[in-house]
Image (cartoon, rainbow, N blue to C red; front, top):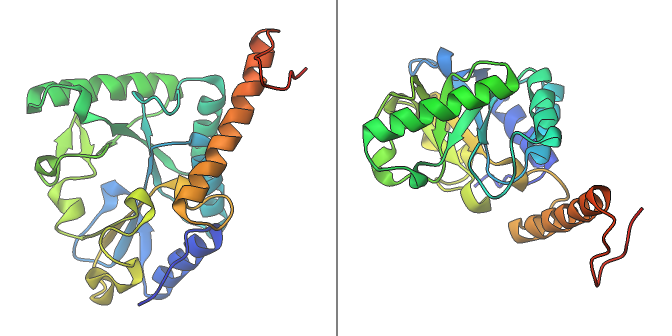
Length: 243
């Protein structure tokens, strides 16, 4: 078994190893189940700042990928000043932006999901002034996987051609859901592969997922302290007053 550590170095090793096997990186629109290529996908569940770090790393490695951004989440505001700047950094590094779509907050029928995804894509397109051509579902129910080729008029990253016709590997919750990627049957057979990763698990110091989340929470608390000080001059009891 080939163990890939969750770190910047580990991610670089993973991509370099796949390249040595003959894999070339393609966009979703260029997928072809008959040839050995790699589709890189990142679902940004927690931090756009970490996603921008990963985008810079990928640029240094000479690869492009698609970063899927949530519009409706309590974790971040994609339309804030700093997060729009992070998205622009990702795009400037040569990567694409897709919509990460939370189906759970909408009615569970194709028409409702299609209309909601189209609306969210339109909002994100206007905000970043760039087209959105691919949608990935956020923590999808099993029935959504492989069901439709398009959602909201855009390609679905969970359509059959991206998760069944080719190999599929995911690092959800900081662990490989379908085994170590270099040992995946698709890689052994040199078949096309969609590699889904979440930037939060790879950026920062090398540690277990829970430690990475602790690090993120500490960084986030510091940021919010600074924003409180910037937005008001009210001292929060128990905290050091800044500025």
